[in-house]
Length: 334
Figure (cartoon, one colour):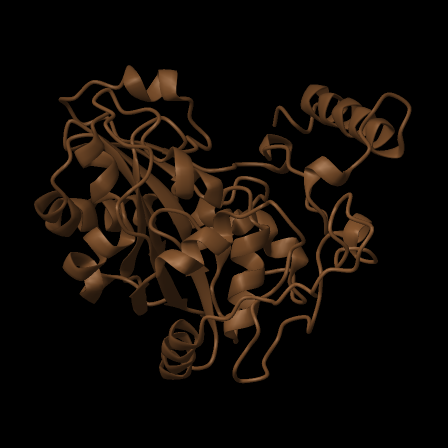
């Protein structure tokens, strides 16, 4: 993988070319002060002061151990001046205007990634945001965005930098009717579509079994007619969404391998796919027994006690035994 391949996958790079076949998006370049705010982990977690009084959690400090004494200088014994929450008025006004234009609700992402790992902290448990403060809360709480901020080029064979020269915030229109079963990840090797995977692999959707052949035709035609002609890398992945009226929308581009999840494939399998021939492999979860493991909880996995003897340890053991029982049962082999 080369740096140029990673750079092409930044949303501010690919969106202008695919705007007509993507979801409506506004992109704002982030000031250096806001980028440093996202990177700063040296003190209490303070949300920015909202000039519109639209705080997600007013005056919230996200560090319980320091909540009571964060105003005292370490080792001084003297009271220090209270910490002033940051403020980004120009950026907030631009974002507020964009949210209103997009219908009042959006989900955010940086150059490459969305803060999916911090959805648990929002009041809705999703990435849906209606204010600048809600966006700041999700971005500041996300560990996955550290990839964008510090490690985007770690897997590049010609690595010359650790972060891009500029960061961007993409505000993507929130669609309440979004159906997760209609989102797919597509794998391109040698400018040839070699694989398609159901994007949400933790759920079995019977409708996909019925529509699999039609969906494969739609996505392959979309790739050959639009994506292959406009995206310059040889190896990459892209995510699409198929609407109820059978229109295909491109949602994202990601580099081949590295931090990109192969979902129902493995990267070893995909690397072995021939670059020539007609052997497109479309994979879906075809039964409840084939669902990929995943903990759908309201808190991050790291916060759970999964040690031996814990409640979650017993749950996982029971789930594994049940999966083996179902797999060996006569009904599973039918």
